[in-house]
Length: 199
Image (cartoon, rainbow, N blue to C red; front, top):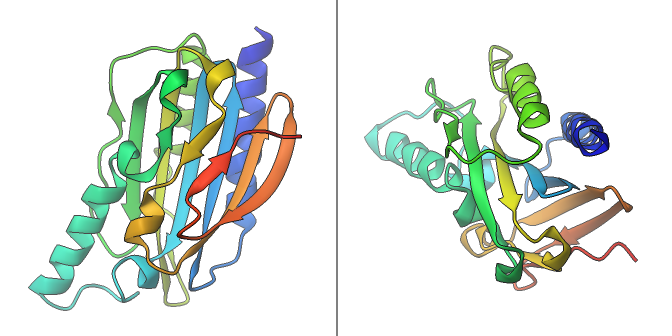
C-alpha cells in the first residue's frame, strides 16, 4: 500500500514540476519518478527543437515531420533505455503536440505492474485532459508520458537517453524522484547516460 501512495505522490510532483517549467528553445524537460518497480516518465520538448518550427504545419513536408516526430516520441524505447539488468519493459506510452490535431493513443502493453491501481488512477486523471492549448503564445511543445515496469528495480543503476542523439544540441533538464530522495541534473549529447544514484 505504501508503494501505491508513493507512486501517486511522485507522479503528481513530477507533473507539477514539468508544468511549471518555462518554454526555452534548446532545452527540454525530462521528469522521472521511480517507486517500487514502476518508473513514470514525462518529457516536454519545444517543437522548434524537434521539427524546426512551432506553427501549424503549412505543407505536406511539415506535416510529415510532425507525424514522424510523434511516431519517434511515441515509442518509449526511442527515448529511454534503462539498464538491461533491471529488466524494464514499457507498459504505457503516449505523446501529443500542439502542432497536430491527433494524439498518439495511449498504448497499454497489457502488462500490469504491482502498482497498477495507482498507475491507472494517475493516467485516468491526466491523459484525458488534452483540451488545454499546448501552443502558448506561439510556443508549441511535444509532450510525452511513459510508464515502465522493472522486474529488478534495485539493478536500475542508470538510464540511457538515446533521444539526445536525435535532438542534436538540446539540453534536457532532468528531475529524478525516488522513494530515496530527489535530485536535478542535465543531459546533453554526447553525455546521454543518467545515473540513478541519488548520493
